[in-house]
Length: 75
Image 1 (tube, rainbow, N blue to C red):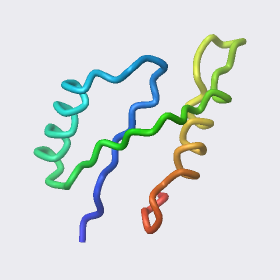
Image 2: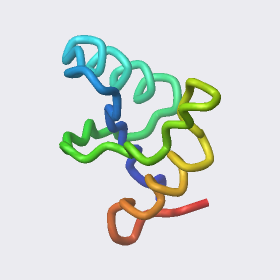
Image 3: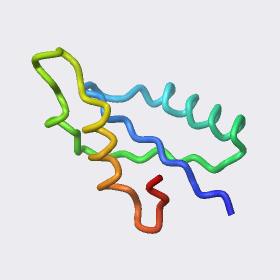
Image 4: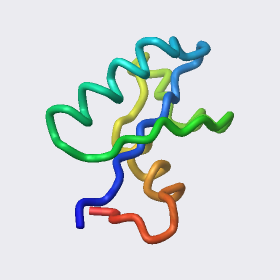
């Protein structure tokens, strides 16, 4: 059974709902999986590295794994 895919906007600004829906539909079409847009107020604010002026992808991924829905694959 193919698990659901969850997409989650973690940007600082409000998400563009039309863009998120277009991404959801494209992923469903290409990968033939069910995609769900999750909406949460939480953000990985600790992941910003001021010295480099960018976010740490490793820190963001660790943060996301800690919030995976129960029963989700964390590979």
